[in-house]
Amino acid sequence: MKQYKIFVVDDDPIYAKLISYQLSKNPDYDVEIYENVKSCLKNIHKSPDLITLDYFLPDGTGKELLQKFKEFNSDLPVIIISGQSDILTAIELLKLGAYDYIVKDDDTITRLWNAVKNAREQHDLKEEVAILREEIGKKFSISKGIIGSSSVMKKVFGIMEKAIKSNITVSISGETGTGKEVVAKAIHYNSKRAKKPFVVVNVSAIPEDLIESEMFGHEKGAFTGADKKRIGKFELAEGGTLFLDEIGEMSLAMQAKLLRVIQERELNRVGGNETIRIDVRIIIATNKDLHEEVGKKLFREDLYYRLLGLPIELPPLRNRGNDKMLLSKYFIKVYCKENSQKMIAMSTEAQDKILNYSFPGNVRELKAVIELASVLSENNIIQEDDISFRNINTLTDVLSFDLTLEEYNSKIINSYIKKYEGNITAVAKALNIGKSTIYRMKKSGVI
Image 1 (cartoon, rainbow, N blue to C red):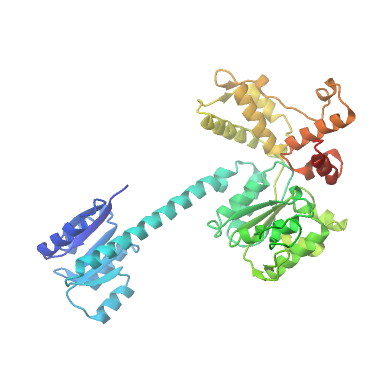
Image 2 (image 1 turned 45 degrees about the horizontal axis):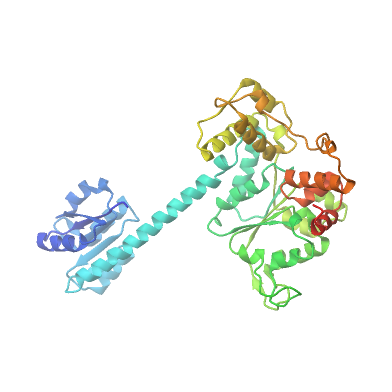
């Protein structure tokens, strides 16, 4: 741990040594003594973490010298040690930014020790917060978390910057696999709400009879099986961001309840009477055209305009030009780091194969393709044959088995569930079947 540097400025060498001796009992303190401010300022480049300052010195008063130190670093804690107990002087110095004002008497050393201890704790806390902010910034910064230099992505970045600087609701649209959740996280973790929770709700993955409880919570005994109180996603996201993914799959009845909560900024748990105030930013995502859904009477118009906010449309990967290669190199780098391997390169033929493919599964598909190619590569080079595009719509592999119709259905649906990472809505849409059919097959153990 870095030592905490303390400058003791006092023209009484005996008293200065006493202070230094007492503070140096803590091995984490690095104490230096200066008999006047002039000599202290010559060494200010050493960046002290705290200064103890005698009020009366040959080259100025405590008030004058305090202002000089504050000009150097406004956050620098300065503890004034004085032989006089003038309350008005003490108040004036504290208003000017002195960390503490201590009168010289029998308890001076004890009070000084405690003041330095408190200042050190605040210093460490600020450093910890700064480190956490830096780490959050590294993890979720727009430039690092979302790879792209194409003109369409630069436009997205510009809109995201506006979203970060405000508290407006954000609606993110785009095909499956374009990175809607990544964008939502980048907005949250770069906003003023970054220290508060980021809570994700995948609307399509929650059965209709459970979504109200999932969103708003419930009280014990609210319904059969509610054996204890449950806190909903809105309450869990208090002060932070609630990300509602696949919002277009929400039923009209639930849309009405959501609208009320958003309008009133308050909710009641299922089975409860207590009104709970909420402060939550909403970010929604969908691969549907909600305006079109409104026209079909499948989405409430009033809720649509409540949630539209600042719209961000994510382009499909096929429209992002050379971003395919930027993302490929990024995924290779991540793979090599996670598996402690030397950096892998791509042959020109492999790069051409990537650039000429449309990637219907977008960034998610590209990531899977690159990870597999990295595993298959030899001599740290990905060749053209290592790039494999598997279209699960082909039935060649499936029909090679002697199965019943039910078993064929099970195999196909399971393959789609794996492709869409458990997104039942996307599976149902791709196969043109109802979500209830899939839930029923899962419940009966068929899939």
